[in-house]
Length: 124
Image (cartoon, rainbow, N blue to C red; front, side, top):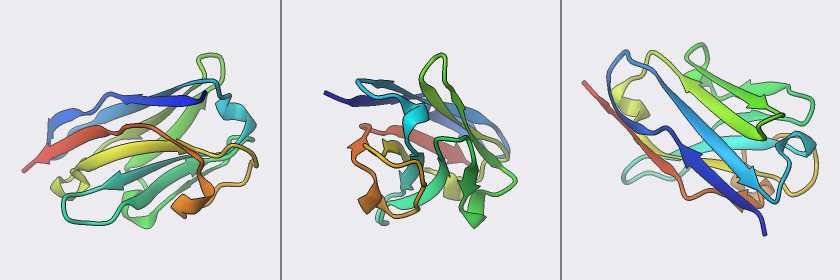
């Protein structure tokens, strides 16, 4: 049984930083692609960033230059380093992993495993 667990969310002032972590059991992140998504109140869940099996990364335009996705294979953990946070970054952040396939996608349908999410709140 695969379980993903996010941590690291919290309340931060605009301009601040947070690092989210996603740990997995029953799944090896380096074997497939992993993504971060977020859902703001009243909005649909949206893609934030992804990393493929080889370590190549991709960010959505709204977070480029501010967010960095990375992976520690030894710890089997994927991170989302967020800096220069803005109030519009407030959302529940989810990590998701594909069960197979190293290519990353921005569409939710390609991801098979999801965490429960962690709340990030950015105050102005």
